[in-house]
Structures are given as structure tokens and as C-alpha cells.
Length: 275
Image (cartoon, rainbow, N blue to C red; front, top):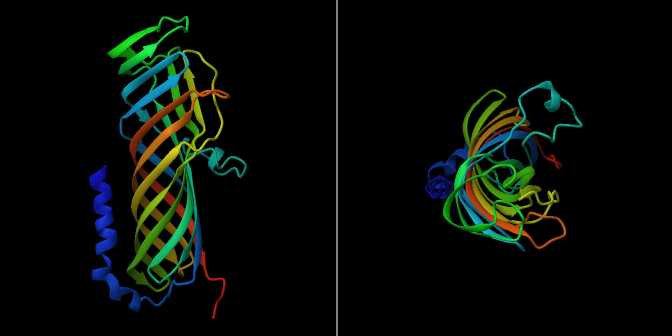
């Protein structure tokens, strides 16, 4: 994961030395333009050590496996205006500070679901819960059954981030423009977490839990340099040391993991002050 981020960083920094002159041949100047886009995503996650700490427990699940949960492609919910935020989505607003660079603010709605019934190593202690799980654990193999642990950020794993992007012309034919894009981002994580620990109360509230950094690369195809389609590949690292796992209590979880995200978006770019 770190190698992917480093490679994208080197491309982002090094590419201008090669492509600096290409912007001068672009008939459409981008400086001063705004843009926005909307689209959907899929994720894969690295394994994660998740620590759960509360009044009667303090234990860590090691190398937990998790998946995303994208809605199946269908008319409902993708074509229903009141349900389009149910799938995993992305939206972003940006501004070109030069012909090649833009800054933007965006919201990545991901979903993170710990795989149920997997067998994982557990270390720590559970006591005075009145369940069969009261004991001390030392790298003990435990089946993550529903009466022991359910853990997911499904409504969702929100990544609010600011990006700096570089855009380079690749090819144009009449009113069709193809451009490459690279970006670096950082932001905060505000998940809505569903956690059930030893049948304790389910929590379901938004809470700023940590931060993330990411890098992306993509291909932008625009018509008349206004409407565009963009495909992106993003890789990042997330650290959340302050996850709320039970409402109105001090019970917390913490975890960090890497992710790779694929995005498909459509958007529009425009200039508010045409000369």
C-alpha cells in the first residue's frame, strides 16, 4: 500500500518536468473553471487489528477481514432520486487554480463490513458480562459469531477530504478531450458505525473518528470541455483511534487499514466569468 502511494506521489511531482509544455497546446484553458461530479465506488481493504475497550472488556481482534457493500446495479436505487445516496458514492466540487492544477473538496461514502463467522486471533480480557466469552485471551482463535462481535461502518465510512490534482492533456479530436489526472488528498473520517459486542446496545451515530490520506490517478473524457466522464483508482491509509461503539458511553474501538478504491463518476465543468 505504501509503495502504491509513493509511486503516485512521484508521478504527481515528476510529471510536470515532462508535460509542462503540453498545456500551451491545449486550446481550452482551464484556469478559473469550476467543476463538480457525482459517481459510485467499490473498495478492497487490507486486514486490520481492531481494539475494543469498554467497562467489561479490553481485547484486540487481529488481522480482521472486511469487505465493502455496494448495492447491486439496478433501477432501484440508482435511478430513484430519493435513494441515490444508498449505494457507495462520491461527490466533489473543485476549482482550477491554473491550467493544470485544481483544488477540490469531496465526500467519499464507503462501507466497511467485517466478515462474519471468520476465525481470528484475539488477545485481551472479557469479564463480568455473564456470557460464555468471559476469559483472558492470548492469541486465541475465536470465531467471530453474531453473539460475540458484529462490526461495520455501513451508513457509512465517510471520508471528507481536500485534494490537490494535476491534469494533463492526452488526446483531443474536435470536441472530444481526453486527459490524465493525478491527485493527493487528506481528510477526516466520520463513520456511522454499527457495533454489537456481546449483545450490547447497537450504536448508530456519526462521529469524527480519525483521519485519512490518499492518492489517485485517473482518466478524464470530456465533451466540449464541459460534460465529462472520469474513471479513477485511489489508494489510501485510514487511522481511526476514536470509534464510538456504544451510544452514551465511553466504549471505544480503534483501527487502521489501507484501502484501494475504484470510482466511476460523471460531472460538469464551467466558468462563471466568461471573457
